[in-house]
Image (cartoon, rainbow, N blue to C red):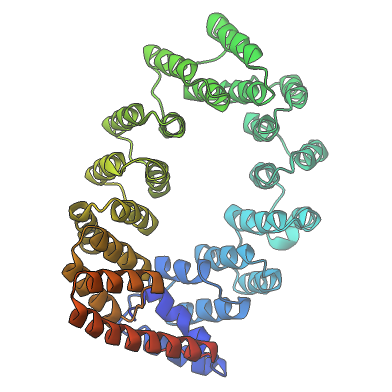
Length: 469
C-alpha cells in the first residue's frame, strides 16, 4: 500500500520502538527518500493521532536533522498540535525549553496557549497565564490584551472578556480595535443592550466609532430579530454620513436578510453596494452564493460565482468543497462540474474531499466520461493520493454504465496497490459479470479478491500488534 510522506513518518511511532535512539534511527531511515519541510512537519504533528511524547520526539528529531529551524515559529507549530489534543504538560515542558534556549515567545505563542486552554473549557487556567505574562517573557501591552480578548470572544466567553477589559483599563491604554473585539463578541449573540453599553464606554474614552463598530451594531440588531431597527440605523448612517459606508456595513445588512431567508432584499443591498462604488469582498460572495444554493437557485449561484471570479477573487479550497457539496446533495452533477471547471480555470486548489464528492455523484449517475476525466485530473494535475474510497466510486460508476471490463481493470489496479474494496462493491461487480455470462472473468477476479482480502486481514493483524510495513 502506498503511503503519503506524513503517514510514512507517523507510522514509525506505531511500531512501538524502544528507546529514543532507535526511534531517531527509524525516522532517519524513513526520511531518506522524503523531502522533510516545515509544511510536512506541520502535517505530521497536526494530523493523525500521535500522543504527546511522539509529537515532541518527532519535532526534536526534525530540529537535530536540520529539517526545520529551532526558532519560535517552529515551536509554535508543535505547540499548536499539542494544544489541539490537550497535551498541556508537554506544552509547558516545551515552553520551558524555549526559555532555556533564550527564545522569547511572541503573540502567536500566547494565542496558541490561551486558545488551547479556553477551547478545553479551562478558562481560569488561561486567565491565570495572562496574569503571569512577565514570567513567560512577555509584557502587559495592548497587543497581548487583544490576544486574550479574541480568544475569549471567539470561544463565546464574552462576559469574561468584558470583565477583564474593565480590570485592565488602568494598566493598558486602549484603542478603537480593543472595543471592536468586544462588540464583535456581543453581536454574535444579539445582545444589543451590551453593545450599546460598550459603545457608550468607547465614546466616553474619546474613541469615535468607525465603520466596523457600526457593522457590529447592525449585525447585533439582526441577530436579535430587530431587522427594521437595523434598516433604520443603516439609512441614518447613509443620510447623516456618520461613517464611511464600506463593505463591512453592507455585509452586515446582507447577512441579516440571508438569516431570515429574504434573498431578494439581500440582493437589493448588494446592488446598492455596487451603485455606491463599494467593492464586495470574499465574504459577500460566499454568503450570497451559499444562500442561493440552499434555496436551490443554482443558475443564480453560478452567475454570482462567475462574477466573483471575474473580480479576481479566488475562493479557498474549503469554499469550493462547500459549494460542490451543496450542488451534489440534489440533482444531476452538471452544475457541480461547472463550478469545478471554473474553479480549476481560475487556479483554485481542489481538495481530495471535493474530488471524492464529485466522483461519488458522477458514479451514481453513471457519467463515465466525466468520471474518468475527473479521476485523471485528480491523479495527474493535482497529485492527490487515491485511496480505496476513490476506487470504489470508479468501479461503481463503470458498473452502472455497463463497462464491466474496465471495472475489472480498475479493480485489479486497486488490489495491486494493496486496497481491498468493500464487499458491497465487490459483490456488485461479480454479480454483473455473472449476469453478463462472463463467469470465467468473475472467477479469476474472485481469486484475486480473496487474496486481497487475506492480505488486508493480515495487515490489520500486524498493525494491531504495532508492526508497520
